[in-house]
Image (cartoon, rainbow, N blue to C red; front, side, top):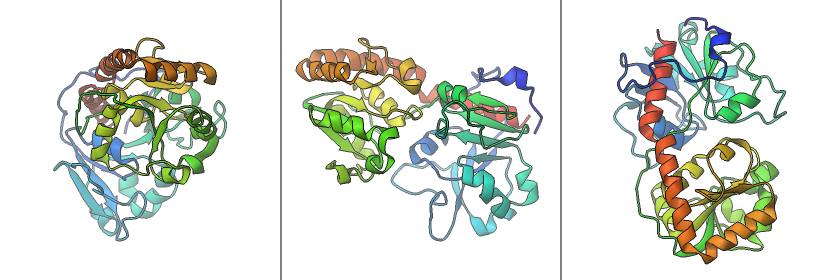
Length: 337
């Protein structure tokens, strides 16, 4: 892989041409299953993806797991046969894969292949002074939001930004007849203040909220909702509430916008560039103001419909799967020149 000019990359846009609709050549991309929904959207890119598996289908080695409609371009590669595989690119999605798995699971030649590190999160130790754990001038670090790219100290690793893209599994018209807010967070009790546990509890004590996600039953929520049932849940609720203080722009937020659900949340991280208060939802750092807005949405279904329709237009333009595919094609083209 060619060494990049750090002055040229920065956190800037992808190199031209980013409007390419087809691959320069079809690639064999090795990766691990980390975030299922993201991986499903990523595999809409017209390359072949090989997912590392083990006998236990353990974390990050689970392959084509779940109910997502994986296409024929998604394959499984047992870890014991990995060194015999022929690949063009290795896509790392977790620090463990970079620090440990590649040295154990990959051959020396495979470790030297063009390599991409996909960073899903902002820094969690210090929001401003954390050096990214991938320090390799011959790798390419891809951030999923501009906020993440700004907050990480990327060091000597060149980086790009590819914002989320979503291919809805089911598209249903928004109804909003359930006069409640919907909150979608996995393991909220365990993850605490960073994911807004205290914020959720304060709002839930004053307004009707439905909490779904892994282990949400620990907080009186509805538990994990099967992926194909979530669109109907989104379409039924009056608004979507995002209590998270510090994270990437969650795919659940984008999915809610695409479903026509008005989003209310904290004015932090990337969300402030997506939600424009009073037009397609509302963001603020003042909880009393957010509570007042949510009460208004519960009273006025017409306002919720108006904001939700505006949010859907923004989401389709900014987070459409076609744009996402083009951007990833440009990234794969760049690293395999």
